Image 1 (tube, helix red, strand yellow):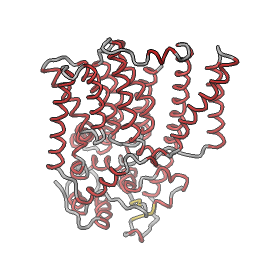
Image 2: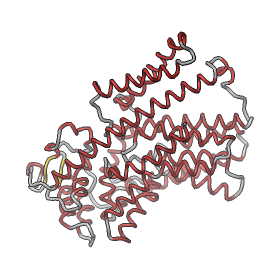
Image 3: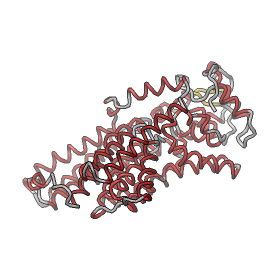
Image 4: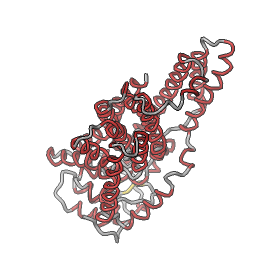
Amino acid sequence: MIIVAGLCWSLAFVVIALSSQLELYGDGAMFSYAVAVRDVWAFHWHNISGRTSVYLLTLLPAETVVAITGNPWAGIVAYGFLFYLAPLAGLAATYAADRSPGRVIFLYACGSTALLCPLIFGFPTEMWLAHAIFWPTLALSHYARSTITGAISVFAAWLLLAFAHEGAFVLLLAVLATLAPRGLRSMPFRRGVAILFVIAILAVTSKILFPPDEYYADAFMRAALHFFDPAIFRVEIVFELLAAIIVYAALLGPISVWLPKRACILALSVLLALLCIYWLRFDHSVHANSRYYMRTALVIATPLLGIMAALAAITREGLVANPLARFRQGLISTPRRMCALASILIAVTLIHVVETAKFVTAWSRYRDAIATLAMSQDSDPALGDPRFVSSRRGPPDLAPLEWFSTIPYLSAILSNFRPNRLVIDPTGNYFWLSCATATHSTERQLVVPSHTRELIRTYSCLHRPAQTRRK
């Protein structure tokens, strides 16, 4: 069930994302616009050299597609395809690299994909790629051969993971910790220490060679300080998942006393009925912009699952004693335990399915609303230009879908790069492009109409007039 769930979600991510244009959601709107005008590095990625893997694996190939085809939409679709293909590619690489008994690491990778990835699906956070790279990295670290080819493959995996997101260093430390039980003098552990030392030097060097612009340096510091803020988890999806697990456990206990053979199924049936009542009568939330902040959950939960996977693998190899042997003897019988775990997996999967469906439906409505505003004749000159229109003119119930800093780029793309108006969030206080960078974009010969690039330049120069362009 776990393997099927992981593979089905991995396939669904690609299909749902491309059919719903989720590559345009959140920060993806700005990234997609940068792909369309073939200026991804100058627009933003020089500010985040620590995430170069995402640039090399998704954005640079998409930008190349635009250069070859002369079609900005082809590049945007290529970016979305490559980005949302990552979980499936990661599982395939994990399966190929995993030589543990029963391929237990691949099993945990599927479980992690099914349980964690739907929390952030739709928002283009770089932790999406870091999660996908983590699992084959873990498998290679334990089972790559002690040869030059093996060392190169492990180094390449660690390097890609380290430069996917700054939080990936937590994942690398977890991988190294899982190698310690094999012996501090073992080849895998010593190889991991050496590689981590080299990667740390490369990471520092990249920050020195490609420092972020002054505007972004402060923003990154604020974001880092709030990365592990507990308030991040005060969202409906987290409460819903925790409540489902707690209610199931509370139901399973008393039902097991009266109907021990059917307790598992009965408890699941009652839980699913309660969830349906909640969704139909009481739930009005949309897990949308909060998906971005759930990246913290991946930084915390992914290494924990990785440690559990590695512990299970080396236990099956007989390298260490099973630390849970006595604990498991005190639990309910294996069939009942498996039934309970399967029931929780079903409930969590159903919650993810429903929340994803609600999100995609709301996103489709929001996308249409922004496109309508972009092609309208409405105007809000108070925003700085008669060619601007406020996003507040859209339906208020779609507010959870807003990502204020990228709405202008979204409106430009959804109008097929020919907007009558640039849609602006009047409360926006974060601006991606400096005036110099946006001006340089208008001076180039590109497929994207100069009128659209001029609107972006006007918007950028209103808010970041003194910022210089970084090459």
